[in-house]
Length: 60
Image (tube, rainbow, N blue to C red; front, side, top):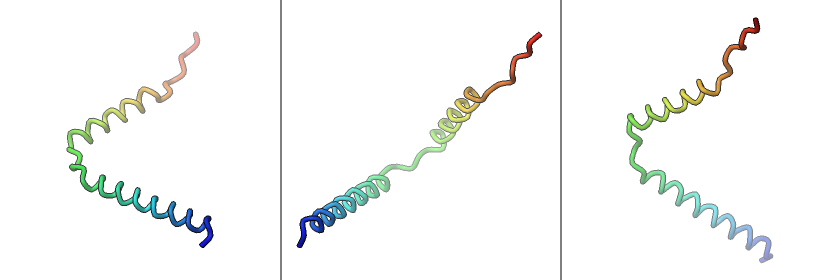
């Protein structure tokens, strides 16, 4: 077997192992509480309001 083929198979095996590990770690996490989700939503809203351009100042 060519070395390139072996390396490709090794990479695929490694990627599958990483995907499985990631899937298992996300399944093991406890569900996010409603309070946490609401809190982060408020933070995101505040950041959007703070970064939104305001009306142009009137020049007298």
